[in-house]
Image (tube, rainbow, N blue to C red; front, side, top):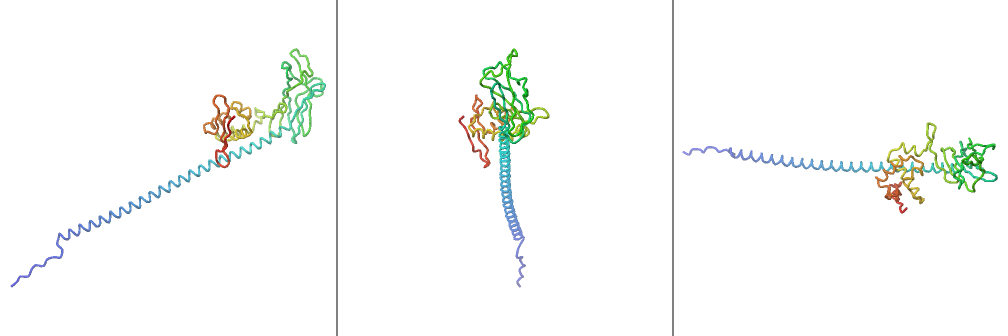
Length: 302
């Protein structure tokens, strides 16, 4: 009689262990693949964030540059408008003219050819060319033995009678053939001084009642860069007319405080907008900031 064989299991313990190990390996592979995918996504996200940040930084830089340029253009337009106002003010001051006549005595006739009334007219000096030792004065005994006049209206003329005295007090009616005279007066735009037919120049006034010079007050109140840009426009305009620019003479020529002009010139020199010849204080070239946004104008060869 045959003894029945014992039933053998389909999977033995070794098989189960092998299958478990395979499952663990598959799971580990899946985890690794998932981690790789996540890492790739994170890297792409990081790269995208970096690109976005670079674009934002570039846009911010462009915006800042545009703002700075807009500010510069605004300053230049303000300077242009101020220059136009100053030109109009000089044109008004130019309407006050004096003329010396020597007909039996020396007479200075001052006429206001402008429509606006002139105030506080004063004869500051009369010089007889070739006679430096003689001192001028209002001729005594005349109806108008004075050197000032309160108001001068449109097309009105006032006459001042002048003679000279020497060191001993002796009077000299008209000692020379040529004379220089200087007058000062106040228009609607401030106080002016004029010698002969030369261009009127502003007179700086001090004290609480002094009007001062509008441009100098604006420059004093402005920032260093503002002062520099405004002065740059003045320099460019003068160079365009062929005028020689001497640094040491600029404060007097422009009617501005010396300290303000020096600060503005230093800023322009450090920024590369002007080039001065070493040793003689002459400005050799000026690079002007134009409304189109370029440092385009260069004038040189003085």
